[in-house]
Image (cartoon, rainbow, N blue to C red; front, side, top):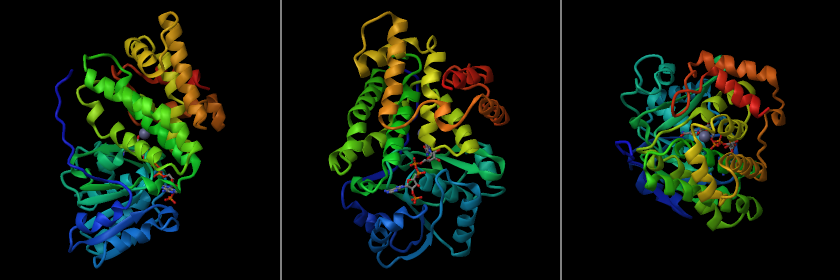
Length: 385
Ligand code: NZQ
Ligand code: ZN
């Protein structure tokens, strides 16, 4: 196992009715900016519940943060923070609202052009405003990590940053708040969490059985509960376990001390920025091709994944790997998430465009061994046409 530092200061308040605890989680004298997305927070009643829990505190609202939050919109929120002397931020929504709030928290105190936060991958962030979150969509893990992904529309660039300054102070996870999710978002969440786990697990062995078995347990839980979340949409226990899986998938725990491969995400981000495809769907259209093209470098972990997560043991090593890639693809499809570029109207000319954007953003040495160059990214996409 590699050496590592593990730091995660986020307080999790988990369970039905936990929004009421905002009164103790948010500082008593805070002037709070509540940030949310399109309309779901309001129409589901969650926004009102949050405002009730905040009691006498002064509250300002900022709605309209898009799925795949944009720099352009978030900079409007930064203005509100400054003009209204806001001193605490509260995100109410999914990964987009939480990521957006992280950016606002850092940008409001940033000396210089805030886009540099993204261009420096967060290295230039030296401080951020305090903020908490109320999660309404289990998927990204943003509620308990220090990452954020922001899109700058005018550049068609979707970039991420990480900083210890943007861990949420707390996150409220009430699984019953996910009952209102459309099927498509439930499926997206399952696939996104699944791929977060595989990107920290399907690399090469470093003798880290704690991380491996934790990752395998999370994957098995998704395989078991993902379809149930669609067929039994009002089952609290299913939603509760899915929510916790998604949080654990990217809270840092399973990824410490092991190699990572974020190539699927980096390629996927370009696809969202160019073609506005949901984040999770871009992952489903990249991962199977990536596992196929990189089967040699990942051989040992692919065989372990086949055996322990899917119970596949019959066949030659190559046949086992073929089977497990198929199983993974079928699982995404079973969740209603299609896995071919052509399913989303993309063709080989789209691949040229995606590759050009990868190049423009310096994504030329991806993967756990930095050997996914542009030619290999092209091969991966062609494999999934
Ligand atoms: O905008 P509203 O009306 O609120 O609707 C949202 C949105 O349209 C809706 N929704 C959320 N909660 C709901 C609900 N509808 C009904 N009931 C509820 N309870 O769902 C739609 C999608 O929301 P969004 O926040 O965009 O989804 P998700 O949580 O999947 O977040 C995706 C974003 O997170 C980034 C992605 O790149 C993408 O921008 N990621 C962030 C990561 C991180 N910070 O660590 C890691 C991930 O890999 C990912 O890249
Ligand atoms: Zn993701």
